[in-house]
Amino acid sequence: MLLQFNITIPPALVGIAALFFALLLLMRVPIAISKAADPLLGNMSLFFIPAIVAIVNYIDLILAYPLALFLSIVVSTLLSLAITAWLSQRLMHMLTPKDVNTAQPPNKAS
Amino acid sequence: MLALLPNINYLATILWLALTIVIYFGALHLHRASKPLRFIQPALHPLIVATLLIILLQSLTHTSVSEYQEYTQLLSALLGPATVALAVPLYRQLRLLVKMNWRVLVPICVGGALAPVLSWTCLYLLNTPLNLQMTVLVKSITTPLAMDAAGAIGGIPALAAVLVISTGIVGAICGPALFALIGVNNQAAQGTALGAVSHAIGTARAISIGEQCTAFATLALCVNGIATSLILPILFG
Image (cartoon, rainbow over all chains, first blue to last red; front, side, top):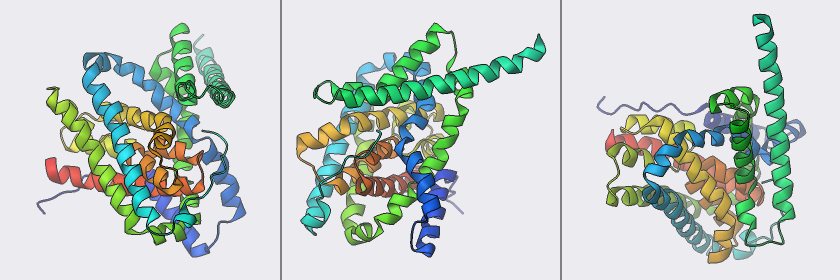
């Protein structure tokens, strides 16, 4: 083989696929699973904090290329988000506007 | 004395865990309470407030980041199960996702390609080192995938984690305000953009918008993560 895929799919993505197919087979979400899933999902941001704090270790690098990193991380991320969201809305509206464009009851947590 | 050491770590673990949780929920309340201050609210996002407070406490107590991460392992360990739980909204919204079909896949591909290309262009035009340029290509996929892919194309895995997290935070904090600004009120469209560009941290933000938003973000997160980490090594490996 000329091409080698040295990518290991992270366990979390395998987990999403496994649970998703299990739910497909069950054809419903058991109460036990939704009771476990809801608090985990609702507070997902909390679980990112230990990883996010590590950014301080790279403050030197960020200060070495402030403009380049600002443009490539902040500006281009915002631009990509805007274009992707706008395109999705255009494409999805063509289908059934009323079906998709629901009023959104705000959920808990961020 | 030596026998006491494990006890000290045990205490620090409980203290830092409790502090992190208290600070997080405090930051959540502050964020909600600041709703009337429309323009300041995004800057008071719980992730910013909580992270800054914890960094401040760390420097006051002379705790290093690696020590802190060791103490709060329980929280990072829950990230895995929380990510797996995304299968639930994905399943609940399956009918709508199938109905959208290419209408959701096309924006995911566009967003997944646009984000790294734009970032790379900025770094290329500003003459930054090549390994930084290669690393930024993985910024829009979830951390474990990004670290592997960065290593495969001559980037720096540890740096990849930092760029990925920064990209996620930018999307999570500014996303909703940005969508309001450009008039994107469609939950499915918001989710697709958050998941495709700001991966798991964007998806965590999508959860607070609604289940539909979460499902589209999860799909975008998975599709872009896998596609990017397969395509990059073929192009640059």
